[in-house]
Image (cartoon, rainbow, N blue to C red; front, side):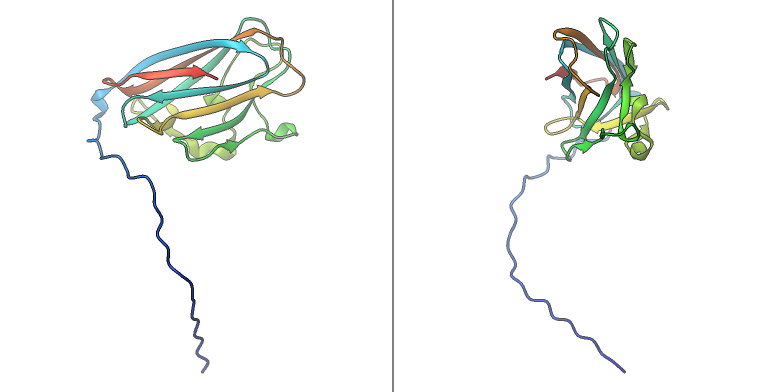
Length: 180
């Protein structure tokens, strides 16, 4: 008979962190509604789209469609996605298999939610209305931050890009969409 004994030594230290916000009561499905928010900016090949909600309750992004004033000179791809400040998931790479194309070259629109790659399908859930959506929590620190860019070369300086999001959210909150 062999008896193995392991002894671990080390020191304990304390870790300070942010305290959690007080829990808010759950929202009934009847307290959710559909809203559309939009923003536009000059697109020079890279942009960050941020969607937030004032209330600390889940909100669902059902569609996030990009529209261009002129057809895309090259493909616009999804570079990263960060949900609830948990850390950015990098999406695009140097080969086509790692790229999530949102707007193909020559087109003027594309949808980000529908472009999520299969290996990130865990980000897609059903919203209260039964649609596929990306869910995030609102309030401080919550929200969705999406990075987009072009596959190669520069995009025409000053080309206008507009994002329109269809969102299912609590009816007593304010949802915003912005570019940076």
